[in-house]
Image 1 (cartoon, rainbow, N blue to C red):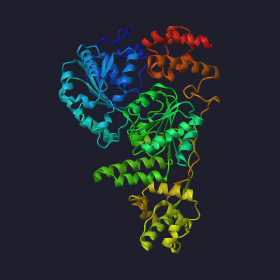
Image 2 (spheres, rainbow, N blue to C red; image 1 turned 90 degrees about the vertical axis):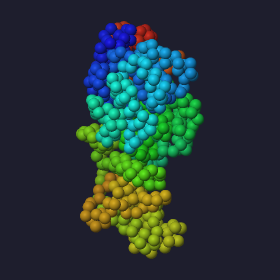
Image 3 (tube, rainbow, N blue to C red; image 1 turned 30 degrees about the vertical axis):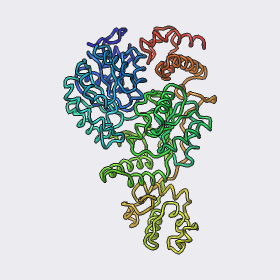
Image 4 (cartoon, helix red, strand yellow; image 1 turned 60 degrees about the horizontal axis):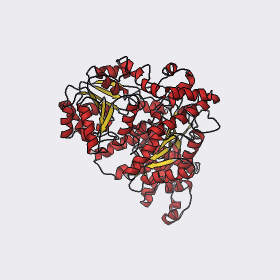
Length: 615
């Protein structure tokens, strides 16, 4: 048995969970996974972000003799992960390129001396002969492969370095391995198993449902203004992540939010590495910051109080979207996943795929990912049901997405769809030309322009046949027709042509039901009039919310003094628990979920003082 932290009176999995981490019971499959790995078996774990994956290797590492090796692609976050473990009394370190040679040597000596519970490193370091030799001389309790979906070449976040991790099977045959990911389809799941050479592993697939996240997708209409309304009306002063497709959009959106009084920072691969690191650390360690980023940001971010994730551009896949939205509400408190989505997103994504590099098979795979994403955006049934079905799980309507809260109205759009297809055919057949969405809509509306006059389009039989719809309604319809493959956007300029599903529509063999654009859905949650951070404390009475703010203020001071993130002191959920349970002694405080032995000894008296001051 490994020597668990000194103050762990009960050296069992449940005892460590309670004494070290401050939780009284396991969630879902956690206990079964821990027993599998602690008993020496391999495990492949598919569990949503915020589902408690890290405990599944941290506790077995404390139960088994030796040091647990954690493979993570996130060098920039390793110091924070180690700091969070240190905060609960676990001996942890990392080996990466940020260390000076003498610092790395000291960590290696700690490993060889058996003085570490957990050691983090990146995959490219692990496969080096020198590292494999070092580990062969140490006693290893387990090897954890985090973000294991990175091994899949058809996944959304492929990392070539991960392919080398198959060496673990030969190098450490007696050491249990656990591979973990928050996003994997059945195909990716199989690929993880094969590429990591884990045929005998026990598989644990948790529900991918995150009921605390409200999924909402609104028609794009001045997306930055829509984002600002979301922040001001629902999340003032709260932490959030905003995803944009391009670096330029990231920079402009962050600057625009700052100009509107929202504390925001940009993050993308084009920024200087030191600036990226500084912005990431500020986001993790300060309350209420909004980070505007490309998808380069966020994998492995362990900030539990991100209250919203917003997308100003269409993600490329449901896997990517699900992982990005999963960075909201890791503490289980109510959070929002919001997206602005428009016709231009569909056209630009198709153009990006068709004009990109890669084999035809790669492009087919990318189109398949995009089609699934578009189906989610255009669904007229519960978004959560559609999301979970993508990951192979059945569910019932959630009652907490925009579709459930504001069911869309549908209409028979068969005739307008036929008119649109006829216009595309006539434009191509009679004038030998193809056009983008704007000009095709002008033709349908009979709206003259310099281009239509030059091409004499007013002479066509389809000129002005679509005046029953407005321009906005045509754009809404066209977006949905593109998503269904009835119309396609091709070439560098996104010109419109009939799609593979056009034939049956033109022949009247199918009915085309489309949704009317819905008004934006607002969360049915009360906010206090004073604004400020309150989502986690939404259930508290006004007097309790004042105590919550006092505890947050105290926590910020402690975090600043220790140079750690506030959540490493206590999470918002733990602060709410403290207020609801109203402890009057250190022993009672120790019963609150999230208050482990080390934190109780370190902060107990100070917390009681804050509570006494405000009562």
